[in-house]
Image (cartoon, rainbow, N blue to C red; front, side):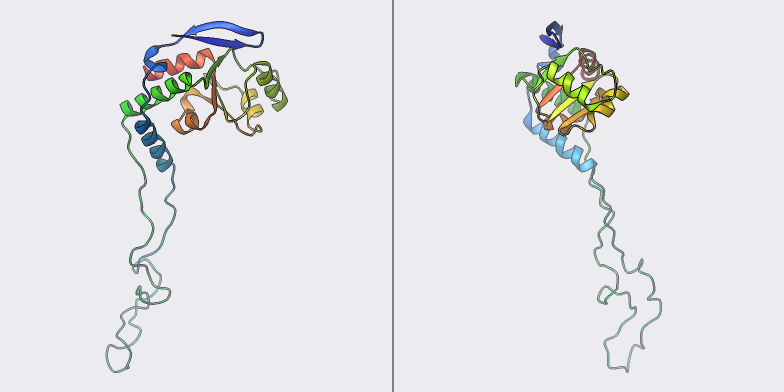
Length: 206
């Protein structure tokens, strides 16, 4: 399949893309599973409570077993006591979800194909900037007639100029192909790639 390449002066010809990557059916259930797994694997289980064995103190029996008139107690760190341990403490949860490599690649192929079908995937000749200035990137996007919104710029090799110029733009993210993830692709209203980045995607997903 052929995809046009946008340049500052207009159309810059077209690039042949592999149908095996950019013309595949979209599996909504698989993509949903990928996004859920990505969010779950990024989750930090940092909540921590202590059991009665982990709480400091409580080694001595608070009072004798009989004769005091009070209920028998063996430790002040019992879960029944204030300041005691928890019966079912939070902590140690594992939220990671495993996703097979074949499933992940098939889902990514479906996402790229759906973006192309919906007109949300665009190829441009590049993002060469003379200096790491945000206004230069804004001017470059205006020259390429790229609409604003949630924009994902994908390059084969990140330059310091593009990294610094894009980090202050609200709704604009720039990354290399190796840093792509399903959430970023689904989030973007438009994915703008260079032809070199498209070639890297083909090598990765074919």
